[in-house]
Image: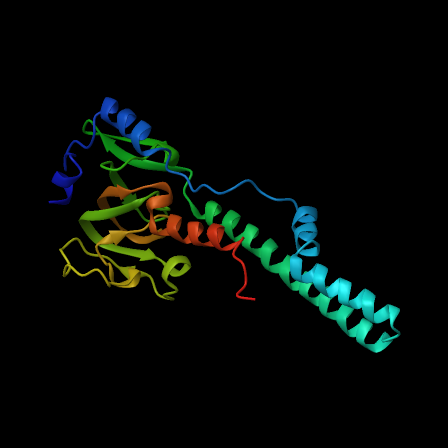
Length: 226
């Protein structure tokens, strides 16, 4: 049913022309984000925050009227706020880069019945993936043929032990957590044992890893309740 829904072939995979057409339609299999902001700009944004400006104005007023103790307290609060805000923003930038490093540079796919290595960026929905021990999975894929497959999903699910995978259908539920989706191979996770064939159904930002990257990227500019 999955192969049919993706208009692919379980034995031959996609044709070269169809792969090119799908790449143009779905886009590159890469994690995207807004342009990197240099550290000095992150620090400047923290210093020009509206709350920081209000606090600095309050510090100036208390200094003028002679409240040295209050001035020092307010300045200390401003410095602490700027440091914490800068560290959080900088870590968010680094987290996105770390997610991009989790992706595989290449993948083995079956196209027109032949197994070939292609750049991971060129993997499209409907491609058949060949998975073996040591591989980093290039996209989210439904497992079709599994032989003692175990996948390290710790970076995505937090599970300390490699997940044992299967190819049989699971109950159709919308609230199944990632760790329980045992017939799915997720982008950015790595095969530690066994081999399998899987059909890609999501690439790039549509993968589970892509959604995590999107949430991090989206959260960066969120305003606090205050």
